[in-house]
Image (cartoon, rainbow, N blue to C red; front, side):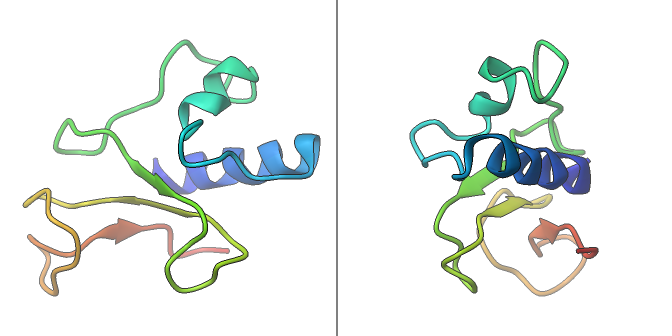
Length: 88
């Protein structure tokens, strides 16, 4: 799911020549009709995905991720680490 959302954010950039602001967030994918559904999916733990722009590692790209099972940023093992799209 996170990869699909990240791809939709890239489509938003192609259409508007900018990424959504933090205040617009992922909801902008709904209002712009890029997502094509009435709501975004939740992560496997029922929480909304996190959107942040500028991104932490690359300020020219947004971050889209799940906080993971513990709902806290960071973490290192399978139950605490953030879930990000691994493809590009």
